[in-house]
Image (cartoon, rainbow, N blue to C red; front, side, top):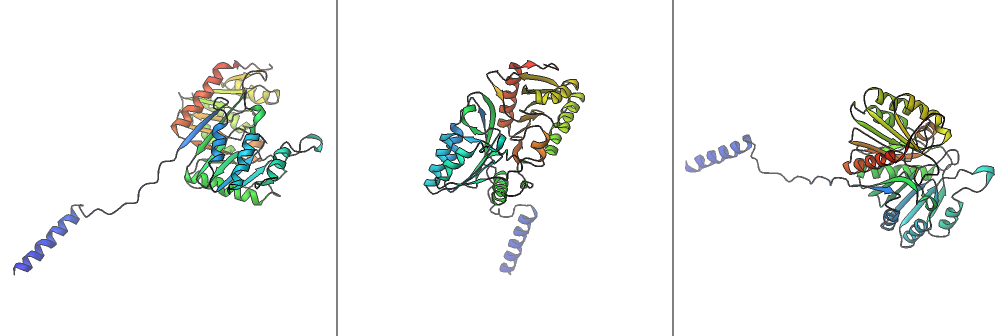
Length: 341
């Protein structure tokens, strides 16, 4: 009898434990670490962070580069290959005027003498992307070429990230491009949770980003080129619904029509002259003080819809603050744009 009562009592205690939600704790898998994003601002930072990124490779290194002329970067690539890293470099192959050698011929020849695998991208469009992926765990997504003569005076950004989805998309797209050097670029791979914006196809996400700007906030934007009517209209529409829109570039008469459209639509436009100490090569913008774009696609129709480019749209607070403050500083040092200047 006592044994029966004991069994009943034990059953009651176990039932009460389950009902009250106090069941024995089960082991939970640890959450993956939060991605780390680091912003590099040029020319202030110099290119040592990029050299260090290359030199840190242990197993693999994939680079896509529109313009490569930097012996330190090239030496770092060759040194990585020499120590057993699988190094692949895809270079833009567009011919300069008159059928002369490409601007990347010297770099191609230099890398080809080592264990680096180097290929020309399809020549039917600009392979304008500037990026490096490392070991399947990190990527540098840049607005800058690795072209040393321009380093001292060119405004550019690089974002180094270990976001798993972003790196996976970079690696998968590189593999596609590496195997398809005789055909146009296809849609880039954008895994769920990644920050990637690929061209062809960048126009829509860039317009959507600008369209998200709220009244009472400030849009900060700078680009080397400007001729995309949808992007221009998105900037004008943001100004008309009550956002302050500040746009900056180095003046070039090729983009005067776009500048005129922005200025007439209520956008605050400022420019540097080509002779200024700083040249705006970056392609970047921030909206709502909480989201930023940086990438290789200028705000033109060919860049967003035809050429191969890559960028990111991120809410990382450090990247947003850094890009916003840099564009704001650049904007403060530029002259107001006047039509016909």
